Picture (cartoon, rainbow, N blue to C red):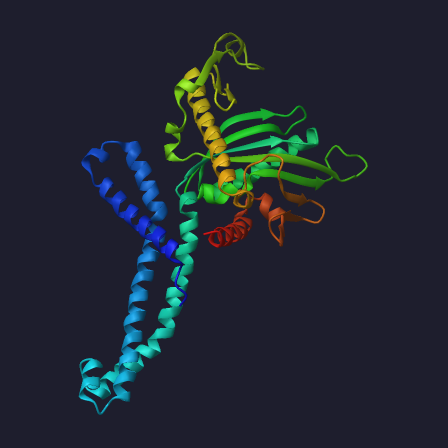
Length: 382
């Protein structure tokens, strides 16, 4: 059994201590009265629970293996010095025959114990590098039409339908925050909040440019066109509310723009936010309620600021790792959908996937493949 490196074991010790501390905090009466804090602590504890349980099981297995190996060694030493009273005493309690029988049983058990320990070690390393991802249970997904005019807007609409179907299959809650229709159908921009277990772990790989090669419905000559749509996935962790200082945000109330009747044009229901340090802007006018628009605008602003800061932190730590996990950079082409061949090729993976199945929302197969590669890269970087 190959032991994990000491720095990894230290990190796992810290995680186990954090898990116990979170349990103690959740039992505190003062904490129980703060429902938001309880939800945040519980989400974090749930995210690291599997890692801690596996780690503690690994420690038990390692201790059991050491005991069994000592038993086998002691029995061997006892046999070599059978004529010596001192040797017999050091071999442990029982007769030489009994010790030999126990040692034989221990030797028979050791292979399975070592296999179990190796599996636990691999699993806890995988869980460790993804624990922060699992603690994020809400994301903001943005889809925008790219190159290709009206066909790009139709393609963006198809991607939105794909993500909606995936969310339904995973039983995630999906809330529309913003939707802008194209001139000839389709969607030029869509923003959704998607919430549920594992949502960031799955959708975090989707950020980038999605390219489609197909014959548009408006193409009379049957020529294949290439169109694009961009996807950005912004983590919305529980603690994101504290990430933006309200004093750094310029907030304006304006009348909404576009069709919608007298209320849209005369009543100041639209909300415009500017985060001064980063220049990030958010405009929200989806509902007739200024209060609802303001709440949605702040949520979107916080997520975008958080993502910008996370990108900078990732860039400072490791350019290579940032590229692996997906930065959400809209210039980064990650996937091509070839309609004629009914295949999808992801630039990060060697295999291709069935297009029809993916467009129906069956994204889990590609998510699993991306996650496996991601985990291997992260473990190698530990």
